[in-house]
Image 1 (cartoon, rainbow, N blue to C red):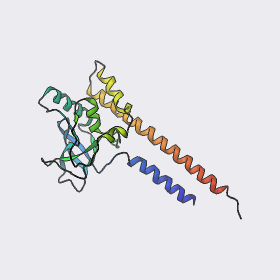
Image 2: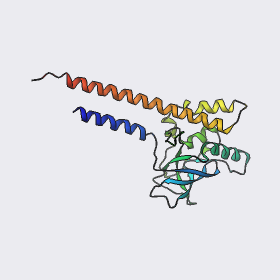
Image 3: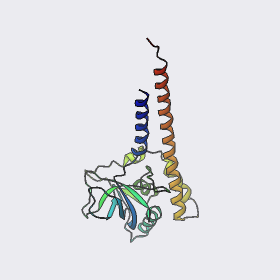
Image 4: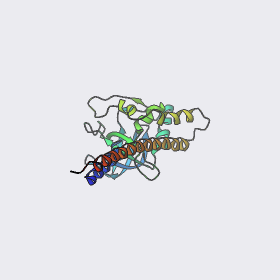
Amino acid sequence: MIKAILLLLLTLLLAAKTSAASDEAYGQVTYVVDGSTLDIAVEKADTRMASAYERVVLAEIKAPDASTQEGAQAKELTSALVMGRRIYLDIDDVASRDSYGRLVGVAYLSGTHGQLIARPCLNRILVDSGYATLVRSTGGEFDPSLWWESAPSSVVQKPFVEWTNSDNTDPERLRRCLLSQAEAGIFREGNKLVVQSLDWLRGEITSRTSMPTL
């Protein structure tokens, strides 16, 4: 019975690591077209991918045209966050490609060692920054409101406030700040689940080992 309990606990902990975001595919960003469109060299492919290189458009958001001043700033922000780095993709299950043949999905950043950072997603970061707007599509898989419900706003909003209120608009500083805050949020949630799971396991072991023998 104890083995069964331990197996269930392990399952819970593994689910906690993977349920926060999808990693249906991932790849290294090779080019940023604009704030919400980028090219990747595929490292982990999905069946909906057609080649080793894919152009991805971020679902449910729209960045300004890169030829405008605001669009150029949006492109710089996205480049600072992901250029040359791995991103993880949750591809739209309903409409995986748009009318231009681009993959549609939610993108997630990677950490220092290439690991998935489950929140906030890149789509949300760009909206919070003011360099992209929500554009609700009809019939798509994603509900953008869940991007804010699934993570405390302080995880991403505080770095933007600190960065935009300072004279130092170094994109690399912003990237480091965002990553550190996002990873802190993951570890807080992970630790909470571990504590809860261990408390439950302790109770199960105690109740079963203290039962009177007949």
